[in-house]
Length: 466
Image (cartoon, rainbow, N blue to C red; front, side):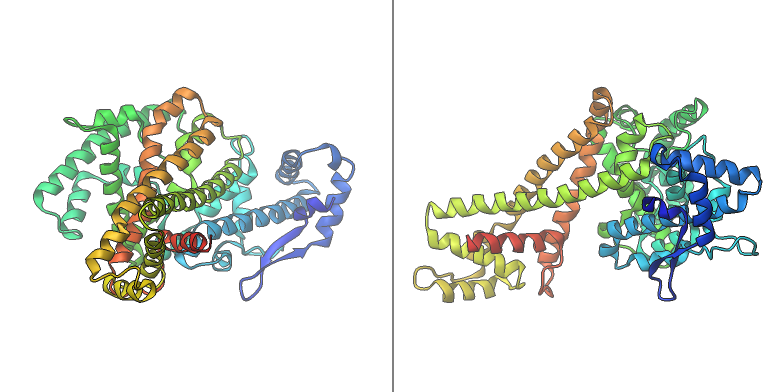
C-alpha cells in the first residue's frame, strides 16, 4: 500500500524551492477505503481510470478523486523537472529547484479561486488518447513559464523541422540579411532550399495529418526519400540534411535572441526536442501508438544513450592514446612517456608548446631534449589524435543506437533511418571534438573545460599510472 502513497501525498516546494511531500489524511483514508481490496490485483492505469471516472461523474466521491489525482500528477510534474535538470542542468547551470516554482503550485485545497497546474492537466486530459503520465509530461514540458525560463538558458523547445515549417521564405531572407548580414547569393540559395523543403515536407505532412498517421506526433526528421526529393544536382541525402539543420540552427539562434535577449553560440545550442525526444522522433513514434508510455521510454533511452556515449568517448580516447604510445614505444620507451606527459601538460595545465618543450627537456634530460615548439607539435599530433577519437567514438555509438532502434522498429524502417541517425551522431561528436579544438586555440586556457579534454586528462592519468 505504501507504494501508492503518491495518491494521497501532494508534491510541494518550500519557500526556498525544495521538494517535499505533504500528506492529505482525508484523501488517504478515502483512497484506502476505495481501493484496499483491489490493490494487489490491479494496475495503476485501472486506478487512474477509476479516479477520473468518479471525478468526472460529479458524485459524492468527486472531490476526493480529484485531490487524489492531483497528488499523483504533482509527483509526475516533479519527476519531469528532475529529468530536465539531469539532462541539461549541468551544461546550462540550473537545478531541479530552479524549475519547480514554475509548475509545482498546487496548495491541496478544493474550493478556491486559484487554479493549480495539476488541475489544468486533469481538465484537459482525455483517457482514450494517452496515458495520464504521458499527458502530464507533455503539458509540463510545454508550460509557458517553464519554457520561458529554459529559453533564458538557451534551450528552445521546438524541433528543427517545426522551425523550418513555420518560417517563410521572406522571413528567412529578412533574418539572414538583417541579423546575420549574409550576402545576396547565400540568402538566395537558402531561400531556394527552404522552398524545396516546404514543397516536399509540408505536402507529405499534410497528407499524413489527413490520414491521422501524424496526429499528435511532432515534426520528425525528413526521410531519406524526402531528402532525395529536396536535393539538387549531385547532393546526397546526408548533405541536404546537414544544410537543413544548419539553417534551422541559425533560425533557432535568432529566435532565442529575439525572445530572451540571450545570444547563444551555435556550438553550444541545444534543442530540447532533439535530445529529449531522440528515441521518439527517430524511431519510437514510428511504431508505438498513443497508449505507449513514451515518457518512460524517452528517459530510459536518453540515460542509456548519454551513458554509452560517455563510455564510447572514454574508450576511444584510450584506444587512440594507446596506439600513439605503442607507436612511440617501438622507437623509445622514454619518448612514449614524454608523449603522455606532453598531452597532460597541454590539456590539464594549459601550457603552450614552447613551455611544454622546456618542461620535457628538464624532466627527461639528458635522454631527450626538445629545442622548439615545432617538435612538440609533431610529438602531440593533436589533429590526428582527434580524428582517431572521432571515428572510434562514432563507430561504437552507432552500434549501440542501431541495436536499440532494432528493438523498437522494423528492419526496413531502421534502414531508412540510418542515414539520418548517422548524421545526428556525427554532428554530436563533431561538436564534442570542435569544442576541444576551439579550447586548444584559446590563449587563456588553464584548466580543461571541454568534455573531450576533461575525459582525456582522466585517461592520460590512468595510462601514466599503469
